[in-house]
Length: 337
Image (cartoon, rainbow, N blue to C red; front, side, top):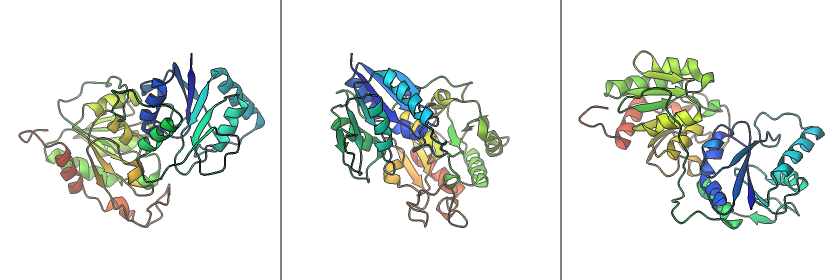
């Protein structure tokens, strides 16, 4: 029995966009184990083809890294060795190095390791893949899987996909999801703009459902007000996938739930701060309207907090822009939404 270890140690959105590549690994393996960081582990079990998820908080990947002690390395080496993988594929973003991870995998005795690396890997990698940066992340990851000797099943279209759960309550027949939360402040649209967008959508005849995790309940309550359905804190990843799957459109910033919406095939109005390039990180494979100034001064800075006074890249977007985008993606039927 062939066991393949995939490694993706950053956030849930990063894990979700790796989905097509993981399906390729699963197609060529008897068993696929995914090592995921704490920020990505929530979305990992939803991915088709993944048989087991191993948690791994890596100090060279996690945005809030812990001090690395020898005992921590010994522990993760033992955990990875217990997987008994025949090969491993390390998936990283364009700004990350796979080599610290590859060293751990070598110490765990994995004989065949593949990754994208601009740095000289020595004997840490058996397959050193090179690629261009200006391509969507799902395609970049799938290119690595192919370089490692894997490919999608003939009937796999290569789009994002998840196994959605069940919504936590009854949903209206037609609705638009607003997901105002973000993983970092630089990608956030101001809360008053979200309120204005909700008001404008309701005025246009749309039913609005507002979603967010348990840490965002104050924000979702503010955005929902009295005229939208507030499901802040009520949806785990599988449930959120079900809510988004039934929506006419999802309005969301550049954050993990944007990729979740794409994975369930729902059109996305993407409030996209250009701190990372949209060509790599915009929602993949679904109809999308990209809003936000992609040439603002913060472009390609990878800033986590907006470096430009007034947050012009996103706060130049108006509620009318959002309503127009939703209408383009999901026209109302006889004026009823």
